[in-house]
Each structure stands twice: as structure tokens, then as C-alpha cells.
Length: 107
Image (tube, rainbow, N blue to C red; front, top):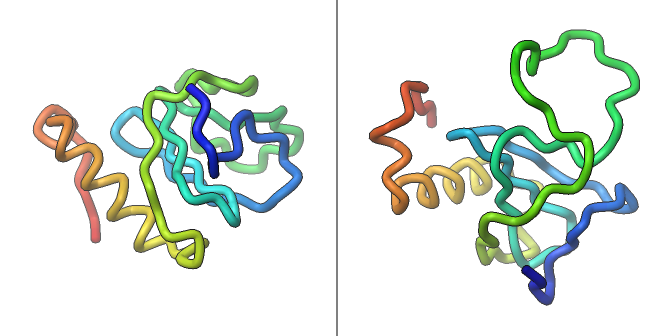
């Protein structure tokens, strides 16, 4: 999937925000007009120094992964974590993932 205004694959040349929720990774690169959605936990690079591994016991993809979806956003909102969480929650809700997920959604 190629989307104009979306950095994919991510090369690490610009800052980004990531959210790991509902079994997906939501990646928002500074200046992008879309949030990339990928299945599982994707870090798009090699983890070199890990002090406290929050992903222990989970599959972590260090290489670029295919996009599942792209969510349109206002590039000026980056890096608003509240906006990113809302986008992820809305996306998951439309796909019925909130009902199947045992995780507790916090505002």
C-alpha cells in the first residue's frame, strides 16, 4: 500500500510517535498526514539498548511490516498523544476490536 503523505517504510530520519494497542502498532511520523497501522508490535529498527523490556514475551518486528491501514490526521497535531490514542481507539472500535480486547482502555 502506497499512501501520499505517509512515511513508509520508516527510516528513522524524522521523529515519530508510536502507540501499541489492540494488537497493532500505530506510528505517526512528524509531518505526515496519516498514521500508519501495522499488525503486532513493530519497532521499524533494531533495538540496541533495552533497559526495561515492555515487550518481553511478545513478538517484536524489527523490520518494516506491511500496512494494515492508514488513518488521516492533521499534521499540525503531531505529537499529541491524546489525539493518537483517540485515533487508535476510534479505529479499533470501528473494527470491533474493543469488544474482543481484554485490555482496559484508559483515557
